Image 1 (spheres, rainbow, N blue to C red):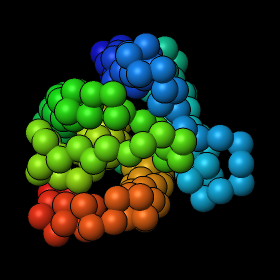
Image 2: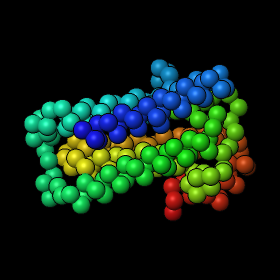
Image 3: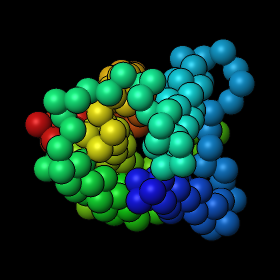
Length: 195
C-alpha cells in the first residue's frame, strides 16, 4: 500500500502541481506534447503508456496482490534488503526531481516547447547533470522494479530507459538548434547524466 500512496503523491506533487504552478505564474501550459505525428509526440505517448502500466501494476500490488502471480515474479530478487534499497531509490528520486523542478521554476516543461522562448537552466542540479529530472524518473523505475521484481516492472524499467534516452536526444537536438553556442558550451561542461 505504501508504494501505491507514494506513487500517487509522486505524480501529484512532482508533475501535476508544478505544471499548474507554472501555468498560473507564466500563463504557459507546460504540457507540450500534441497529437501531431512527430517523434517527440510518439515519445510522449509511449511514456504515458509506460506510466499507466506502472500505475496499474502498483495498484494491483496494493489492492489485488493475488494477481501479481501472473506477472512472472523474479523470485531471487525478493528480499527485505532489496525492497529497502528500492524504497531508498524512490525517496532519492523524489528529492532529485523536487529540487530540479525548483531549479527550473517557470521553465518547467513536459515535451518540447516550440512556441515560447527557451531559457537555459544551468544552476543547482543542472550544474551536475543536464537531465536531473529524467535521471530521477529512471531511478523511480529502478526502485519500483526492486520493490516488485517481476517481468512487467522489468519491461517498465527497460522501456522507460529507452524512451527517456530518445526524448533526451530529441530535446538536445532542439536546444542545440535554439540556443546554439550557449548549449554547446553547457554540453561541454556538464554530462548528460552524471558521468
